[in-house]
Image (cartoon, rainbow, N blue to C red; front, side, top):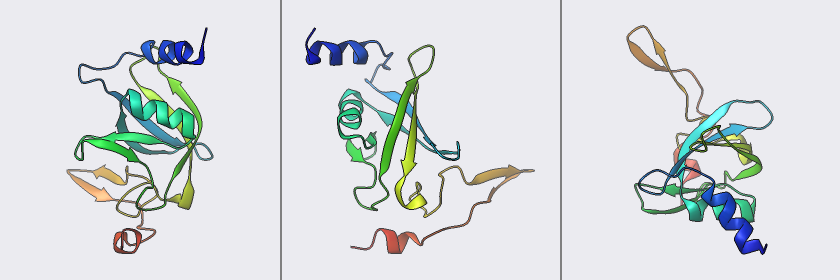
Length: 134
């Protein structure tokens, strides 16, 4: 079997949604903390595997989103796992720079429900104005 055939087999083994997308959870390999959630399509998953860096599909921009392309906060992939139904991916990553969120925090999951309101419980590690200044 050629590399192309092998490539197609593992992609076809996944259960893509009706838009050709699959949810992807990024988890810090060292701490186990979930740092973000995003969507992938076939092209972004293939590029992630070939480059070793996380590449997602930006639904708002309608294009590939190479994590860290603007901020420098690249996600180096250690492992990729699929759940038992093949419809969710879990990426074990090394978060370069320690910031995964565009708000300048370690994780996008920084809001905690406390009573009847959401409270930001994680500190901003770097001001987004400094991260995205061009």
